[in-house]
Amino acid sequence: MTAKRKLGILAAVIISSALLQTDGATGSIYDQPITPLTVEECGRCHISHFNRLKDRGDKHRQVACTECHELFHAYNPLKGNYADIMPKCSSCHEAPHGQAEAVQVCLNCHTDPHQPLAAIPASDLLEGQCRACHSAVGQSLVQSPSKHTEVKCSSCHSEKHGRIPQCADCHESHSPAVQMDTPACLACHPVHTPLQISYPVTQNNKVCAGCHEGPVNLLQARETKHSALTCAKCHPGHAQLMACQECHGEPHGKAIHNKYAACGMCHNIAHDLQK
Image (cartoon, rainbow, N blue to C red):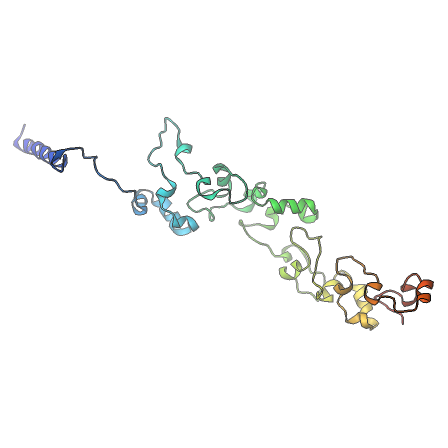
């Protein structure tokens, strides 16, 4: 053995002996307090995960790696224990969509926990799973059937998850006098139950004229006190017809009202009153 080799071995023994000394007693080099790994230390090896969290991690950017990964570097391919050591979504989120989801159900939509919102697939790839989170919408579509019930969710909520379409993407305006925009449409038509029509009493008659042009034109052609009213004043619900007495009471003597069963026998229809 060469002198150089002997010196190397001697140096190693001296260093090892020094490391084994703990407060003057013989101990182990593993008898040291270990602090949890920092995010920076995890990121040195798991740089792609670190960057995805950094760039588009949403609220997960506020969480240290070890808060989710309580077990790490513990995967054993012989045991196939990947599912056992991976964090469970329910350990933090407790059914955020109103049901007890298993982790694999969450991953159907949130395919990458390191960027949980950005990684949601395009809507057409989620078709069939929408009602797992949007059950109230699904129920309303079934309970109040319309043409919207017949189309796929991704037909309207296309391109990406969470996209809100414009009504004009599919529908034309009722009337050229009415600007076709989504807020105007939603003033009467709830989006998932469009035939459950409702509107404020101040609704512009031009909107009504889109479908009911004849009655509106009659009101304007023969000017009476009715002409100044909004359609909604007399039709508070869509297709609802008020009785004349609800506004006018019984303006004539009892004999007249007994003789004529309906006001229209003398005054014609409300949209075209005869004096």
